[in-house]
Length: 597
Image (cartoon, rainbow, N blue to C red):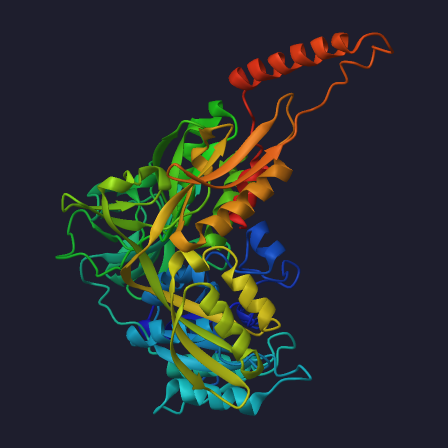
């Protein structure tokens, strides 16, 4: 295909600004998807995405469009997620494109993830086309949002397209701008093959399906290829493009985006960011690819049925193909048996992975309390990186514990500023800067411990700002803090999955909240169950689950009191023996409750 008629672009925006709806209109008006087959959120093919109304995976499709100049263009579109936890999907998509549509909601304006995605696109030197969406809404504020976009671009004053993706208004102009302003791809089809792997998926019949962007050379069926990262060699079985359904073609050339299958059965052979080359005439060097992301949140995932361990491992390996940001390694727990220590980009990412494993692969799971990676400096001069409270050395061996900090950008309405500042203070945050974007919008720059934003920070932010707040963050390094390990003891026995690392001055508060919640969740036994929160050998909080009572003197309806005392004494001895040898089963709800504290 002639490169001058190819345009590779993606759609980026903050969550819920209308990316998927705009992608629907582009697919519909270009005639890519037949009206009979059309449905809302065409590119969101997972049930989970459709139920939650969010994009989780970057999806691609080739559009055919006849422009005003009379030429037929091939537009390769990649729709991306908007939530901060899936920023790696955005980074991968940007690497495969020359331009991007930056969507901004006419009612919400520029949000935190809008800024973050804009910076990613600018760093890669892409053509950025700003689009204001939802102009059909009665409370749309086009002038205010236009000013915010100009402020975002600073010296540049780009043309801004006004569209209503829902009604299809302004879509034709967007098509023309893509053709005019997004540069065609560069690359020589006659050079040795060099293709970037930006995504992959697993098919039980075809094996691993590799999605790639050709930078140099040609790719055709029957060709011998090498994946340069692992030096794995295969023969191409099928080459095709996504429309968004897979359609086989004879050949892909430099500048095109498509897929290939080569009967790859081992998921470990394919790594996002790797380079595909011709085995006969290989490329001189691998493509730059993209920087792999490091997980920031860790949790243990265990099969509820110990017999399902191998099934869980196979499911995780297949999921890893489709989600390169996911990370796992084997782990052993005294309480839960064999499982995996898993790394995620955030709590929503963890929740999505759990649901995908349970839905797509039919594995029932138990998750432990999430934690971040801490750096522990020991007295002998060595430094450890730990992602689980169980790996924390004994207190006398610790010289210092450092925890990860993030620089967060928070955008909120001006009238919610004081409430958000209080929230940042409660989470041990430090205020760095305040900037008024307009009379009604404020941008806060703060620094926070990563552990404090893991669970419910985003929910609290949305609640205090009446749904208008947003935030984005990036890691800035480690800082020493006064931290301790908080253990939960059930009848004097530590329950490892419920342990956590907390700030020393908040250990009592968190311990008290934990034991109170567990008291309501652990079922009553035939003996009293003591639930304690401890820091080292010091108990900071305690609650008890009362024993199931049996009225042993109910049959005594008179006579001497000594007879009743004998029965009570015998019952007391029995309960003492039962408590000594009995096991307390902790339900999954108890572990989930810890996640929400």
